[in-house]
Image 1 (cartoon, rainbow, N blue to C red):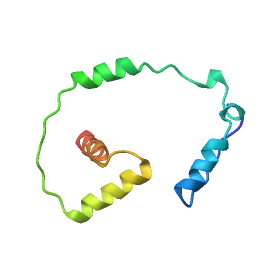
Image 2: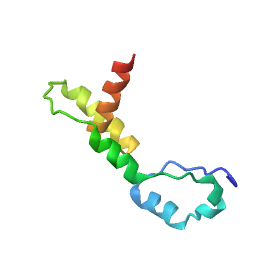
Image 3: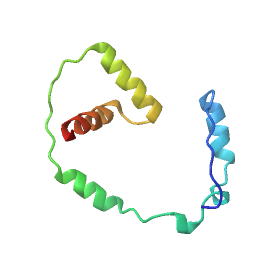
Length: 91
């Protein structure tokens, strides 16, 4: 890593777009910083894991709270719920 990349808080999407469109990542990272990631291997593993649909009633406030957290993390809220359930099951 050449120098630390500091990502500011953005007021809106236009400001964020402006930041990322002008950023030159080669100032912050060299090719040796990157690690190999095999997407095919990841997808095959994910497909092997069986899933089952469930129906669960949750308080609306809880769902909204998780949706807001998911939005701030830029992940789908149902995926975030799966993570939370997994973390609870691991305790």
